[in-house]
Amino acid sequence: MDQVFKAELQTLQAWLQTAAGKALLTRESQALDRLLPGLFGYHLLQQSVMPDVCLYRESPIRHCMELHASLQDSAVHPRIVLGRPEALPFAENSLDVLLLHHSLDMSLHPHLSLREAVRVLIPGGHLVIVTFNPYGRYGWRKWPGIARGRLSDWLVLLGCRVEHYEGHFVRRWQQPWLRHFQQGLAGWLGSFQIVVATKEVRRITPIRPRWHQRPLVAVPLAKPSMRNRQGD
Figure 1: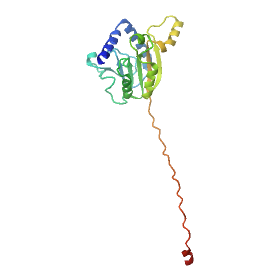
Figure 2 (figure 1 turned 60 degrees about the vertical axis):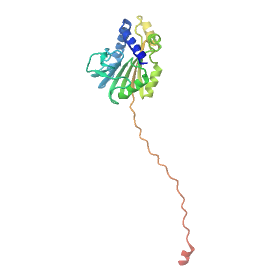
Figure 3 (figure 1 turned 60 degrees about the horizontal axis):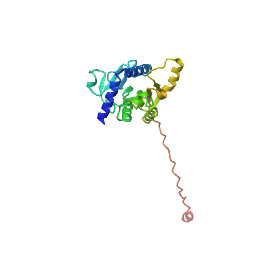
Figure 4 (figure 1 turned 90 degrees about the horizontal axis):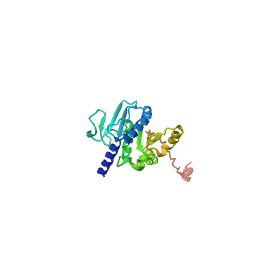
């Protein structure tokens, strides 16, 4: 299973270096450049299938890190953190933004990887998830991706709220009226999709104690004694 997974990952990484793959990365980068400036915090972590790609260049967060599986992926850099998506080397509630770039597509256990991402995210923090659209061009031919409804269900079960969703085609049609039509189809048949979710803050609601009134016990009254009356 691991060998098959590694082979699929290497195939995807090799394809992303082709002309078609670079066009996809460019389109994804453009979409993220519009979304990330609105997400603030102190710490950002990027999980990408491409070790040397930087997709957080427009983020206002200063401390940005990249998760790598090993040092062989790239040279040693202060921003590189070694670890696996299923076991992130971070404490609970410690990161403000997590950018998952096709990491769920290439995960053997995407639900566990998503749960781990939510674990290290602070309450109110944001998840930015980039996946292939299973009904799009690459979903049908190469990589199945994760359906929008399934991903939303996972996020809700993990205590997150989906804030934003958008789908994209890699190539845009030139005619304005066709481009408007294409935008309407992108959410259903686009090549890739981006989901932005927020980890909800768990509010503790105080529970008022229920005071159970005990039933009154009827105590019989003492009757006056005849002996006492004779003594009077």
